[in-house]
Image (tube, rainbow, N blue to C red; front, side):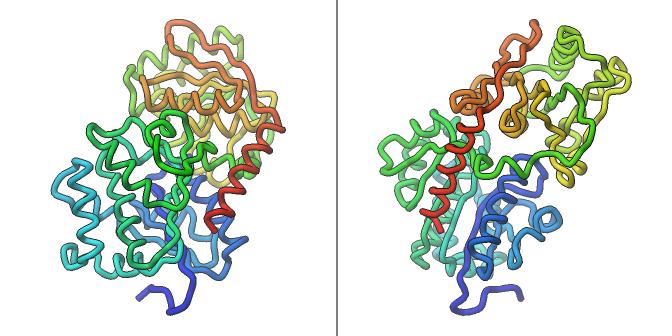
Length: 375
């Protein structure tokens, strides 16, 4: 059986890898590479919803990384998705593993961790209200081991109905609490020491750059999930914008952040764009994003906005909802991405901006300081 040896330092990460989703995978990769440099002899566990695919995607980034789904299973096993009910069940199960007998070994392992770290992303919020059980599991496990508890780069809004007091109470139990946007910081008002350093990927934007040659002049990433607009309206906006920019189709590339989900809009427009290049998720995970400082980008995806703007590319972020993605994109604009925000799909987007290198250095330094506080 795969368990840590007595006396061996154990780092227990919680993330949402393996779906797969570009942003989730590169955030986890960033922390695993950091731990490979600073904690090479530790056993690192990544608790995630899809440990098999995560092993394939991330398993070579730390010499002692292993994958499990214990905390996620506990959240799914609760009889309700209501946050208070999930949190109560998870905490009981960690204290009395017999309530969840299939995951006793995993619970006992988590209760021996030295550091427990909920890595960044926007997965603990009201869109997936049962995920608050992940924080409850960390808190309950830390009560046994005395582990240092941390959460970083968290996007916590929209908060589940009636879940705000619970969220704040759980956050009070963490040693390090960091969020990535203003609304999340406001949600944790009153929790001592909360920082808003930004998304965890600011820790390492350079290694996300491409290994491609002859990258397209214009790049597009348009999703079909979590929309409050139709995929057809997005397709129309893409064509309208590309024509307004006067770019030949053969100089346009489409990139896939989530397999299949980010190909649906491309499938609607590809016949109107002969010669346009499609970069599947499998390619960008192997070779990085095809991004260049001179490019123009059109993206609904948050982490494409972050990485492209960090490379110096100008762009426009297309707003697809009223709070979740709007908050995410605004967190980058407020930190200096310079990109425009498109809220009216009836008018073409206008690309602007790109991060200044000095701004990126400050953001990276802030994340490095945060890592030192944790580890």
